[in-house]
Length: 61
Image (cartoon, rainbow, N blue to C red; front, side):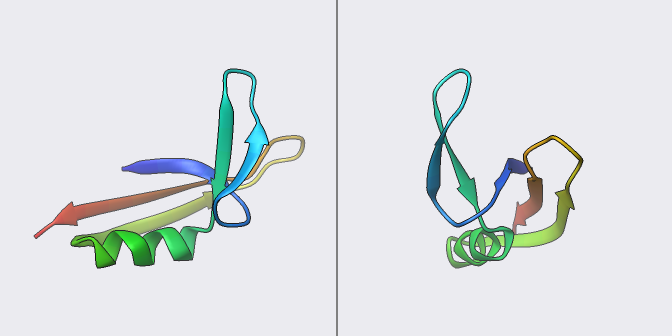
């Protein structure tokens, strides 16, 4: 399971703790697949007043 902030792929932004990055769910899934992972599920969550989140579940065959 990989969770991340959704947005333009590999764009840095200021976070309370450290510099964080947004990612495109589709681009991230392609990169994971290219690295040998099989994506089994993708989710996106958006709420008022919060930064969009995405998650990808994947397994190695």
